[in-house]
Amino acid sequence: MVDLEVLLGRRFRPGRQDVLPAVALFALGTFLYVGGWYPFFRDVHTLALWHVSAPWRLIPLGCACAAVLVRRQLPMPALGAGLLCCAVDVMVGFSISMLLVVSELLYSATLHASRRASRGLIRAVIALVVTATTVLFYSVQEWQVVVLIFLLMLTILFVPVWWAMTIRQEREQVEAERMRAEQQATIAELDRRTTVSEERGRMARDLHDVIAGHLSAIAIQSDAVGSMRGDSQDVTQVLRSIRKNSVDALTEMRAMIELLRGQDTEEQQVSQTAPARLADLGVLLDSARATGLDITVVAGDPDRGEGRLTECLPADLPASVDLAAYRIVQEALTNVTKHAPGSRARVALRAEGGDLHVEVTNELADTGEAPLPGSGNGLLNMRERAAVIGGTVSVRATGACWLVHAILPLGTNSPLGAEGEHGY
Image 1 (cartoon, rainbow, N blue to C red):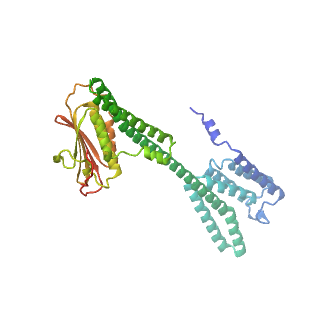
Image 2 (tube, rainbow, N blue to C red; image 1 turned 135 degrees about the vertical axis):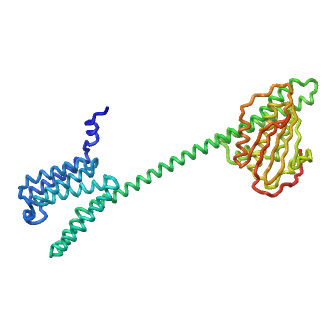
């Protein structure tokens, strides 16, 4: 348990800024008493209840100066002690020395006390000045004396309180600005961390979507080469596909590394990391077919069968929807090559009710080959990509098939149906 005396000693130990004013006020008051310059009026004894010599007046002055030592730690009790000493001094003839000490205690109490106490002190001083002036106006016949005493009270009582309140308000404004700056810095840091986290998540999704698809295709195609016998044309085609997937994966990874390093110019970064589009889906489908998948593409009305993919793409397709749809198809086909290699799959895109519907369906038939291991991030990435643009992704089994269905809002209710020139 902490010793109370030690705690009080640490709290009320006067510092240098407390001792110097107390000593200076006591020395100045003593000098005025010794020189006989301490009374406000020519004959101070005419207003005193008791007549004492100057050395006896040092006792209340010393007590008031002792209160100055704790005026910052205990502002209101120090002021009360000073006023008590002032009352004693009034009884023996009010002096300039005591008035200087009281002014210092008033200033410190207004500056260091609580806000409520400071406001109450200001009201009390104003009421005292107004009341004293009114009483003097009706009791003293000479108005010059009333004006003189009024100005004296303003100087000794009101000015220290007003000055302290002004300094206090400035300090509070500075503190409020400091706290506001700290809050803004905290908010900026949180925004920065959120931005960094989101950017890392986006890069992780892009890296997973791009690299995982290429590497899965490479793994399956490499395994397929070992089972081929005597058909050099098929072997050559598979090896070309392996090389293309490898080069594409290295290019994407190099572009991302250079982007993180910040070493490329803006034009180089844009050219190397340009987002994929549905119009370029043919390359992705060819790579998936090279792994052994039998892929059918349905554009627009599902009853039409295989058609042109670009028939369901509007001329003003939002870039965010274009990229999200491409990545969803890419991830879905990657999962098919991992978990159902050699199966049949169908990619369907259609516009319905202002939304772009993307469906990837594949058979769940057992091919006898062990599926490649997965991290489980693919489904999460697809849902996150759709959620960013306000869409949804559902994944479920439908009979003997597995269905990935994404609904991506286009931001318009106009029907789609602009025909393209090339199909897959």
